[in-house]
Amino acid sequence: MTRMARLVLVMANVAALLLAFSTGAIAFQTSEHSVLWPTHQWEKANPASVGLDEKFLTAFGDDLRSGKYGLGDSFAVFRCGKSVFAQKYPHDYGQIYGKEAKERGPLNPRLTGPYNYFDPGWHPYYHGTDLHSMQSVSKTVSSVIWGVAITRGDFKASLDTRLLHYFDETKVKNVDERKRRITLRHVLTMTTGLDWNEELAYDDPKNDAAVMEATDDWVQLVIDRPVAKDPGTVFNYSSGTSELLAYIFQKETGQDIEKYGEKYLFTPLGMDHYWKRTPMGVVDTEGGLFLNGADLAKIGYLYLHDGMWNGKQIVSKEWVRQSLTPFIDAEGSFKYGFKWWLLPEKGGAGYVWMGRGFGGQRLMVFPEKELIVTFTGWSILKDPPSDEEFVGRILPAVQSATCVAR
Image 1 (cartoon, rainbow, N blue to C red):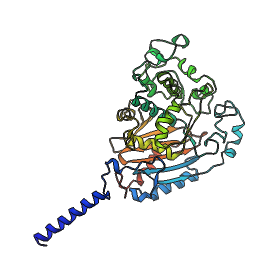
Image 2 (image 1 turned 90 degrees about the horizontal axis):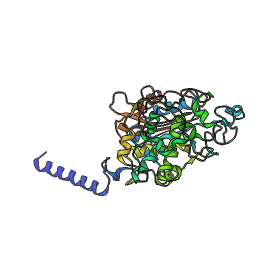
Image 3 (image 1 turned 90 degrees about the vertical axis):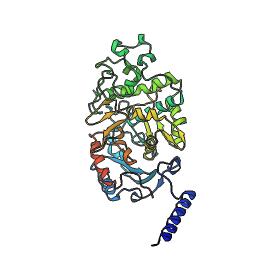
Image 4 (image 1 turned 180 degrees about the vertical axis):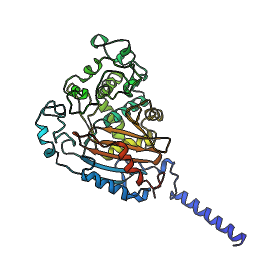
């Protein structure tokens, strides 16, 4: 090829590129304009189009459907802002848990209503809708709403504010120097040091979460507990301290955390929801939220984009960063942030971000791979499969390190 011919070819290529950019046919992945925002619904695509091998997802789905991992209800995968794999596994829970639904026990303390976990009208789906009980993923979403309120300036208190600031000490039991040192940061990170045993099965009457849900005033029961460990030193999983999120939010902002979340989080992201309340009318931030899997994935997508949604900063980058920074060693290999579980990625420097809930609820975000996976289920009488096993079933499907939508 002559020098002139090469020059003409280069000029032609440059012209083609300029035309492509001008028409939007090429967009940098980091550009805001290249991001899809699934406010109304997720765009659908096939796994291969975003660098995933469908055969691994199908094999995993077949095992979920077969019951290998207990009673799974759904499995969905999202990448590049698209829904690329989704399955549901119907079960007749009225038949499966029919006997237990009529017997009073730790998972059915009142026989009727929203805290009968065997009642098919309430669990796992809310009154026949596609809204599924999130259980303890509610804790994660509640933390997000705290972050929204802090970002907007409606929650003004520092995270170093003392927990007892929101209570009349004369009406709180077991107040001592250590209880006075508990802060909001400790509430967010499961490190209050309050005596609480949630390591037993949830159908064990000695499980403190079951004891709490059988009472009327959950907040008072929790704040009255004695301190067993110095605040900030030991991780102790507690649905009780997570229920304080709703109470503190009301005291600090003067607003109801559900109504606030609906206005400033759920509506902007196009999310439907239902949220249970305690017998005293307090929003159940420890486990009462109902979402569908597609909307749950939006929480992960929001955090993948540093709290940004369609050009608006819903929650600050700093809150996202703090939430996903390990504060304390938790169970097994997990670290814990602001109500987020953080599982170290094998061979990587980062973490898989997770919301985890009783019965099989999971939000998994693989930030380095721009991948979101959700699961719902209702295996409430058996130990759940390990999260590490689920991660091990998902990762082989990843054929490209980053999002490669086309």
